[in-house]
Amino acid sequence: MVLPKSLIREAVSTYFRYVTLSHRWGKFEPLLRDIDGRVVYDLDPTDGLSKLQSFCLACCRHGYLWAWSDTCCIDKESSAELQETIGSMFSWYRQSALTMVHLADVSDMGGLTSSVWFKRGWTLQELLAPHTMLFFTRDWLLYRRSSSNHKKDSAILDELEQATSITSQYLTDFHPGVDDARSRLQWASMRCTTRPEDIAYSLLGVFSLHIPVLYGESAENALGRLLAEVISKSGDTSILDWVGQSSVFHSCFPATITPYQSLPVSLPDLTRPPSIRRICNLFFLRSARKMLHALSDLPLAKFANFRLILPCIVHRIKAITVTRVDTSTSTHVHQIQATGLSPTGIALSERLENTAKGVPYVLIHPWHPNLLHPVINTDDTSWLTRLEQPFSALLLKELPHKEYRRVALFCHILACPTNSVGVLKGKVNTLTIV
Image 1: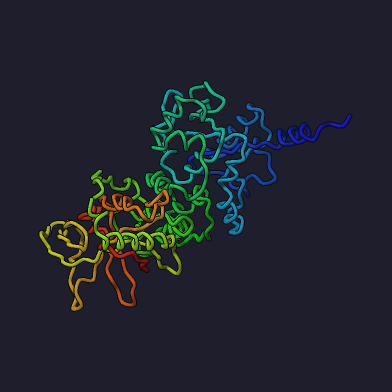
Image 2: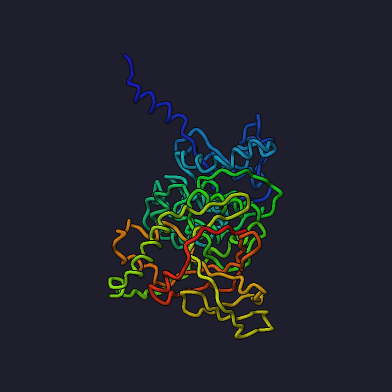
């Protein structure tokens, strides 16, 4: 009798199904050289080996023949294998039949949310990637003992949402990529890694990106390279919406990932009805049509040669007044008057100065085509109502050779166009920022 290929495929795949371990590394974790060619159960049960032995036994109890642990299934002495592993880690967890999470700091009566596992950088992708996941307590007892897949247990999903601030939609059906990059950075911003640069490397699978892993580089540099790749792949300017210290890698990126803990500033709804003059004033209509065509022709933001090529609407700053100086915090509060915008207050550590050529600063509205989605009728000016709304602006200083640098701030700049005429006073442009 000839067996159908589907049955053969199912039998073979069942035999080769494997389980991945997700855990917080402790002391004396076994490495590849410690177990290579040896029987795991014959080794002295140190803390790390005892965990490995318990993991293997748990796999057997659940009917699996293969187990994979990051402590000893990777040759970390090979830089080539380490690079490949970091790039493949997400897919390995995604393709596993089951991921077992060992929470060494949770007792049988404890709760998930107290575990440090939720504060580690690498465990983010280990949480998002698997389709099937089970949590185990310190003594390798199944958490709540009530499910074959904790990602389908509504009560446990509620706990996971509470612990991670990630909605169940992403926990149960996550797709790697650069979509909604700002949210993914927020999930990672509350986590840490032993090696600072790993906070960037641990996100490669989440974003489905590949950049060289260069252990020994600074965390700022690693994060900068990651963000540069994100914006080049997506054009998503929301990752520029942060407050804090600028990175030495690039002025538009933060020095650390922690500023992403805060969501983008919540903008008030000040929607105005379309103005009659939009219909009556021919010059206005021509100006609006010209701006719409210019916006439609803008490219996506991209990063190349340490320069951010950023499409935007530029509002030239006409006047700067220092209204207050707090010497205890070295804070300078400025009143900004920019073309087409209502007066805006900003606070920063440096005093903005004029030059012999005038005011070398601009406020910009970073641009993405989604801001005019869906497609607009060029004979209709109602799209201007969207641009009349307040927006989170970036402050840039003009440098020689038509380049700009972002000025780091203590707070968000909420810029308000005066009206539709004020919107049209902005200049559509693509700036080079270093």
